[in-house]
Image (cartoon, rainbow, N blue to C red; front, side, top):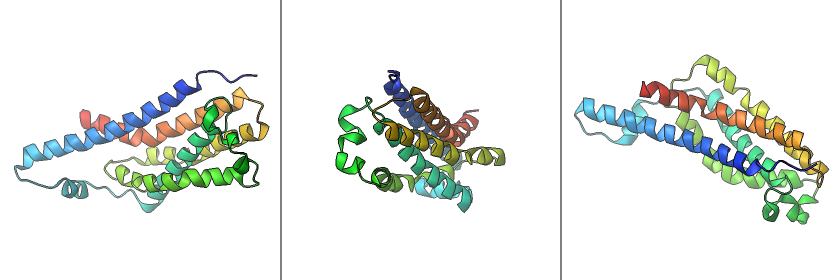
Length: 196
């Protein structure tokens, strides 16, 4: 059984969603800054504006987002680098000294987690500029569970290597995609509200 050859296009779709989230955030802040400049008539610093519009989301929500973004980075790397044939030169199994270790997958996860943690430390701050409803926060609680399913699918693909199971790969991708949609949904909805 061979893997469908659209996985690189699907990776581009994930990257495009992340860019949409980033652009939505940047445009949202830019529009608020312009509105305040037009209406206040006084000079101000952008950091002061950001401090003034900050909405506390709660430590539980911030922790959940931090965990979710870290899990997302691990799930993304596991899905694409534990699957033979997608990136042959960078596949996990090209490094037998790590792949054959008892804790090889854990080592790979930590290698991804260290730079990912530095980046994701700033992520909870982003959500602080949006009014996020209770139902949306509850919906976002599904994200870690979906990402764990994606990681488990990738681990399964690593265990059965060199056999390829396209159903498991597709399940891993769909859960990864839905997770990313949930993670950027507050940003996109906030941007949409601002545009109205």
